[in-house]
Length: 212
Image (cartoon, rainbow, N blue to C red; front, side, top):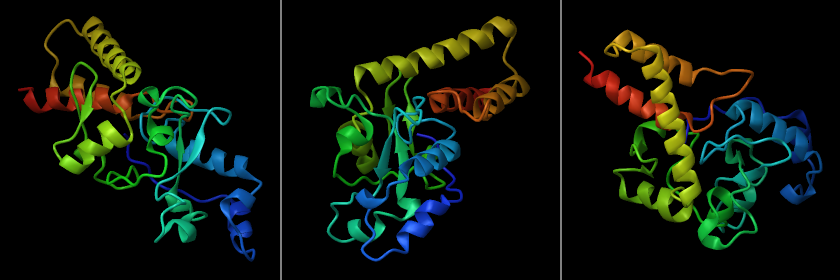
């Protein structure tokens, strides 16, 4: 999960929200919204960080529309809207992930919170976890981010990044080398982040902290 800085909402959403009895299902210009979400998230899923496109994504309500307290009033509020992958929609429940698996459940970890990245860790085998009990439950149970396919995709991203770094630098990895690599994985190329970027950044930062 990578921190999302919410940007300007689409004009069509602002205008539609002014209508009497406006509701999410009645908002017809959802591609405006999808484009805005894709650009601010740099084309990665708000939860698992795989690449998403306008034709293969879902509009996620962080606070579900079904929530009896806030769901109705937040259904068209831009800060509550995120772009998520399809999460193996249509597959058996144990294979689903992200918003598809989350459904109408609420979670603690919010990718629009500045500290979200610091609350999430990754094992070198590709598993995602948190030292916070509630957030760890979000990751494992509600979002189901440790499905076999996501674990493997994260592991491959990390292994490939470390192998590429080793090929370029046969000597010890200095702080300068590691910082350049971290900056590269934090960078935006062709408006996009690298998929699963945070597992690589997490492990590079650990190496940086241990470097002399």
